[in-house]
Length: 333
Image 1: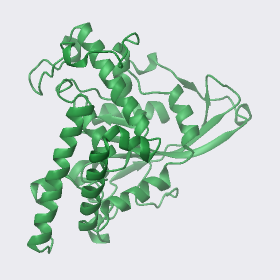
Image 2: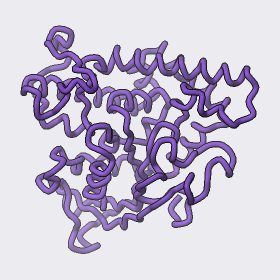
Image 3: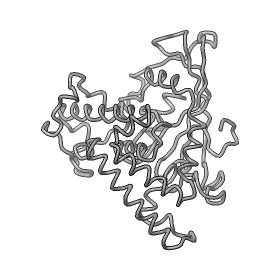
Image 4: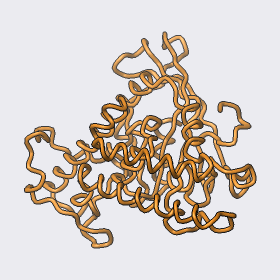
């Protein structure tokens, strides 16, 4: 995955990562596309100068080889096109297979919204989307204990998409603090689910865990291993997770979209000799138009959470993909 001739490039932009126009990890070679309209349209290699972490300068460094930017729906997973039926168009499928795909897609959709509502505050965060987890931390009140907090009675309700109440600048401080608390819990659950299958089953609930695996396994079989192929590709990219976690603990996305220079979490050493231990890794970053909470739930249900650090999940719904790409370049470029 590290050569320039790979089918997936380094830091990517344009059609190579976007929704229906993104490259397909499954199917035959013709369906995947090459480096033209259906494959990676444009790519840019991020040269990996060693990064010296501020809290341990001169002792440990992480050299970022390449940053791989992905979309989710219709790129890493097949989902929306199954609901609309567009995935089946033009393919020689018998009606039994078509009905099975539609049934499983509807089942997965129900699981996504059930889990998002039940354990990830989707109803109260409806219309209160954040572009990344770290942006919500700016207003999070650390004195609020989620273990004793009355989420049902704290007065925070969803504002609904397009209602006009979702503007960050127009929301009072108490709402922003309660939003921050909820996003903190969502992130903690996501991080806990990444540690082991046992922890993941606790986060999803055993019934939800078993149901999601059965449904996604069935869809994967009916789509000729699309998800399995995506999982294998992502696994080849993501390496040295412990080292990368240490990097992210020092360098998180800018919480101020228009003032990225205000938050500088790492510095490049003056020379290679300044870093005594350098680990090189390639990393995966997700930029999707979906809202942050449903996107997080999708990653968990489809088993892709292990490939994406929570600091590497971006929702472009409100800020646009250009802003997300700019922040990625600021962090890793």
